[in-house]
Image 1: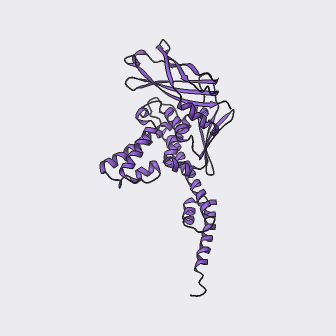
Image 2 (image 1 turned 60 degrees about the vertical axis):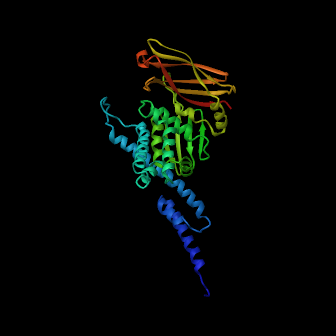
Image 3 (image 1 turned 180 degrees about the horizontal axis):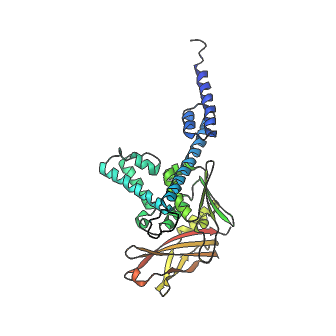
Length: 353
């Protein structure tokens, strides 16, 4: 057949759909933009599609986060009531555990994925390929988040903050950390790629950000970027712990080296009229010059009950062995049970350049 314009028509349709996709992006109609760009042969379609995925993911995170805040606001009364069960960001951190357990129960009950796929994707953001893989993914995320030890803990927000600001986000090509004298920032620059890399959904990440908010973070979206900001606040009884997790990316290799050799030892401990005190030594064999050493600690008795927390902030230390004292106020020897205990440490390090 002569004068066949089929190929030209395909090219023209691709160009038209690309222009429509640009309009959809400007209108923040990202689902429509995705549909117009998938399999689009326009030479610029792939790049725009990649950005649309980032924008859509950032908006999804923001939507879930705002829904969480609205639910908290609607649930909590205006005035303090000591008998009222308040909601806060830590409750949403724990909801992730509930979602994991519910999904796991469905898989075990049915020994197949048919009825668990939606629940699994609600947490992880992707479809599982097999029952075995799904079970392993659930168990790993639960272990990484420390649910076995911290689910019933009144101090679970320490674990949540550490997971978000250290375990989850350090050494990701899609997250940038910055610090000034007044603020620390975690900037998720490519949220779609970040969540895909980490295997968690936008909803799960939004719930985790709620824990950060309760520890003093401000959460913002700037186009496709999710920005977590901690102000550097210090007083006699409080300092903003999240700020010290914002170690710049340039220090992350050094941070890994430090943590690989880090060892906490309890040299002495006792109980007096104030509470339980402990003299702690941590190793610094590389004699790293630490601008800040922030340590949160949770005191746990022999029955696994989380009794109290203590924190310390040290500045400009470089000794091979760094010593400090932790005071767990108002803890009695009876609460320790068998005069035995353990401590869970959450360190944050910033180096002097």
